[in-house]
Image (cartoon, rainbow, N blue to C red):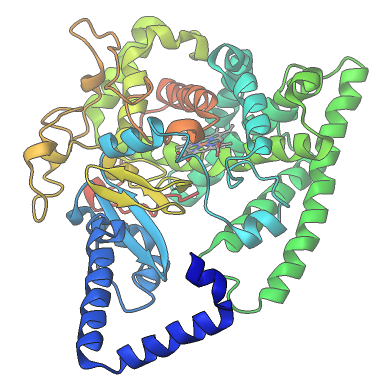
Length: 513
Ligand code: HEM
């Protein structure tokens, strides 16, 4: 200490520096430093959590598997089943995982929801086109919580029951329109009828404005379809890498136009509330409960609009699958119709409120949603912290994709991972040895009543509606709408295939929201 006080600091530093330079030129020092550095870096490398990423395809240098997933997401994700329960994919430096079992998805997205409830960033589709107001792509933010709370309250099972009469009425209109259309047996025409049903029902439930045949209603449905098309093209992977400025300009212009349109729909509900002509609907509940929900005007408009956008295509795809399955399985169709004959008879069509007595038809809808999910790959979540799962590292900021089609199967029964994974810890069964087959009876007990659903399916009997805090916000309404349509169609028609039709070879592209 006394020595230091007597020396000036710059000269001390420079003498250390000189001695270091002298030592560095000494061969023993160089070797020792090299060994120390090598030890340091190899210790860092071997202890790095990045060495414990889940298994997955190596991909190409730098871009990883980005091109393959952009080219055909569904078939790429199918190929990744072979790597096991959780698969790691490098998307040009962006970490991503795919969950292939219900257990892994539930363990993380349900049970660690605080970490796994965000969404990946979508600059054009979310930030520019909707200015952060689209609930589906909004992060795990305060705004999302307020929007989600308002929707949850408006669509929880008791509240959803308010819409049963609308669903029954729209289902009857659907059956009539199918009966009047000579081309209804073609998939394109049928999809048009299903789209009309889903759109009219969504507009009735959200704004009390079912689509009738007026020019104004046609314009309303067409404008919302335009919004959906904009969202889809802006979300297409890599779409705006080229000509970003043009995408930006179009998205900002689209945002202003769509906001004005959605505001107009809400204003119309307010006007009808004043004159006592608005029946109960989602927007009316937003307005009446606004003190609690704390949504601004523009948040109210976009939350309502989001519910419409989220509902139509998923319902159309599911209705089409149910139709195809019922036409291909005549014995299932006959049993469902026998149930209708016994419970309802021929004097009136079924109502949604009859569902408690129509267990077999309920089981058919569940089973089609499990077996042929309309959303085979769910909407991605994003992790907000580093996490570990069964010794595998999932870094903060990882995009988490759920392969719902795989999760709805039992790995063992379907031999999902046989080529690579050890089967030892996959010896669990949720759906039974026949999980790969279509069998509505799996949901029924010996007396033909619905039995409790497998664990982690939130009493749905499948995980097609997603997971955790981001689970489908409209699932109770969707279940009612699907039941209303299918029970009415079964009551009114016999479905059969024209000529040879092989359901196993029918490939539906599915919807990836
Ligand atoms: C058969 C029909 C439907 C299917 C298969 C379906 C499926 C899904 C899936 C897989 C998700 C993502 C879940 C996740 O991130 O884990 C989702 C989210 C969502 N769904 Fe549905 N859906 C359907 C119908 C509906 C309907 C009718 C509505 C509205 C009335 C709706 C509104 C939403 C909303 C708002 C979200 C976003 C939730 C959030 O991010 O917090 N869906 N849906």
